[in-house]
Figure 1: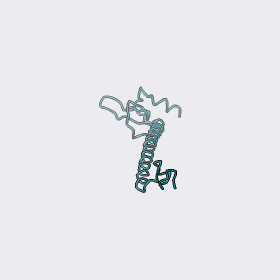
Figure 2 (figure 1 turned 180 degrees about the vertical axis):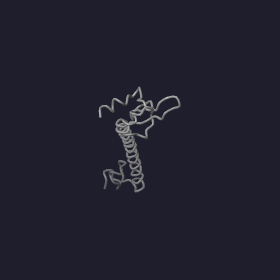
Figure 3 (figure 1 turned 60 degrees about the vertical axis):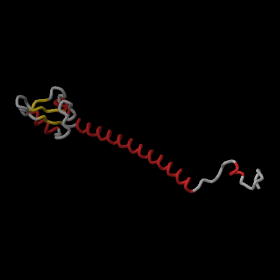
Figure 4 (figure 1 turned 180 degrees about the horizontal axis):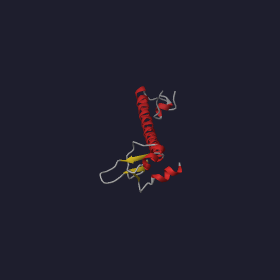
Length: 123
């Protein structure tokens, strides 16, 4: 018999009872939704980190290569460092040997902004 003398359990008399299976599953669902949100947030963080790392690798690669801006009707073709912002094309990179050959051609001039010849002289 309970302390109340009515035959009920003490826990039930104080408002404590075992949750029903439905209540347990709803609580589990709520927790799983929270967990899913945590995982999705972490995935977004990792995607941003990977994109930033990919961008850094591309910049590093470009910094070690050169590119040629095609000749225009009244100007020479320009040789740029791969990471030169005045000619922001991110493809068509050439290596050091090809850049040296291009720079030796009379129709190709070095970019006056990025000065690619300084990087070639260091190699």
